[in-house]
Amino acid sequence: MDVVQEQVIRLSELKKGQKALIKHHEETDFRLTLMEMGCVPGQPVQVEMVAPMGDPIAIQIAGYYLSIRKNDAGNIWVVLVK
Figure 1 (spheres, helix red, strand yellow):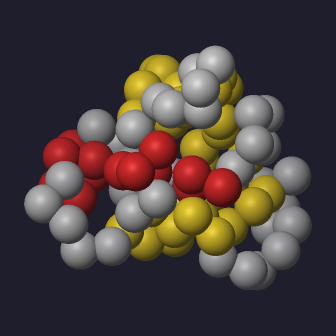
Figure 2 (spheres, rainbow, N blue to C red; figure 1 turned 60 degrees about the vertical axis):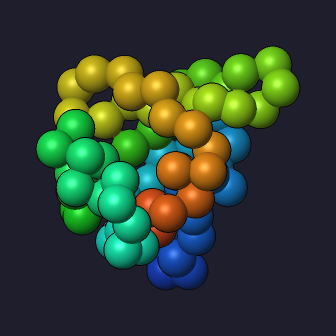
């Protein structure tokens, strides 16, 4: 995967269909849970669906779909890829 931009943004800022690589997590209580579900640094992620009101979002990661609150997605930093 080719990095589109080196700028690090929050996962919650991605639009439907955009792909990224996880860069790092903010230190939160939910961090370990996210990592156990496959949200580890270097892992590719793609936004698949967004709820009608914008929250939650469904991401594809580690071969499965994960529904995550936008607030929690805001604690995950990513870089865009093609």
